[in-house]
Image (cartoon, rainbow, N blue to C red; front, side, top):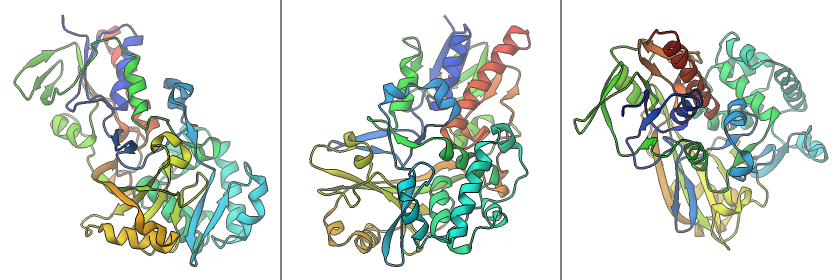
Length: 420
C-alpha cells in the first residue's frame, strides 16, 4: 500500500520530517541512497576508534535538539567552555569566566586579545542571551567579520580567537558568513555546551530513526527524478504518494528540484579532517585547540577521547585535526600537519599513527552574503512537493531539524485543507 508521503533522504532533516509526519497521523516512506542513516552526520569505527566524518559537535542549547533528542540516551559528554589557543610560541587557555570564574584571571592575562576584548565578549554574551532567536535570525545582515569590527574587537582578538574559532564552525576562515549565523551560534554557546555522544555523532540520526515505525526507511534506494506525488529510482522503479519531501543535501536537492525551486542554493564549503591514534593525549582537558598564529594548515584540533573516552579503545587516544580548504587551494600533506602538531606539542606528535583523512568538499552550506546569507527559505515548492534541510534555515543541526519539522507541518496542513 503506498505511503501518504515519500521523504527523500535519511539525514537529520528528513528523519525529523518523517517523525513529525508520523506524529500527525501520516504514513511515511524514507528513501536513502546510501547504506545507512545520517546524511552528512556519519561515524566510522576504525581499529576501535570512532571517527566522525568531519569534526562535528552537538550544541546542547539547540532548541530543536532539545525537542527531538534524548540527551540521556545519547550519553553526552561536554567540552570545557573556552579554548586553548596556540600563539606566541605556546598554548594559552581561555575560559568562560561566567561558568569558570576560577579561571577568570588566567583568561584575562592570556595573550589572546586585550582586556577590553574580554569585557566585550561578556557584554555580547549578555546581549545575545536575552535576544529572541527570531530576532537574531531576522536582524540586518552583514558579514561576521564586519560585525566583530562593529562590536569593537581588536584585530588581535579576531586573528587569534575569532578567525580559528568561528572559521572552524562555518568552515570560513575569511569570516564572510552572515552575521545572523554568527549571532545565532554565539547565543547557543552562551546558553549551553558543545558535546559529543558516547557512540559518535551518528548516534543522533540513529536515535531519531529508532523512533520511526519499523520498515519506514529503505536504504540503497537512490532517486533519479522527482515530480509532485511521484519519484523514480535509478533502477527504474516508480513510487507514488500524496506528497513528496526532498530532504537530501543541497547539491542533490538542487539536481532534483532545479526546474521547480527558485530558492535552491547549492554552494558548499569544504574541509579536511585528519585522525590520529596517540598513546598519550597532547592535552589533558576537554578543550578545543585553536591556531592563533595563523601558521600551518591546522585550523583547530581536539582530542575527542578526552571529551568522550569511548571514542578510543582502552589505553589510547584519538586526535582530530581540522584543515579548512579554500576554493581551488592546494591539498595539504600529512607531513605538513605533522610538522605543525610537532611545533605545538613536541616530538610526541611525530609518533602519532595516522588513521584516516576525510576529504569533504561538500561539508556545509555556504551562508556568506554572496551566497544569500541566512534565509528562512520556502519549504513548499509546488503542490505536493516540499523541501527541507539545513540549507533552508541555518547551516546547523538545529537548522536541519527545524526545516524538517516545519516542512512536515506545512505538508500536513495542506493535506488537511485539500491543497495537495
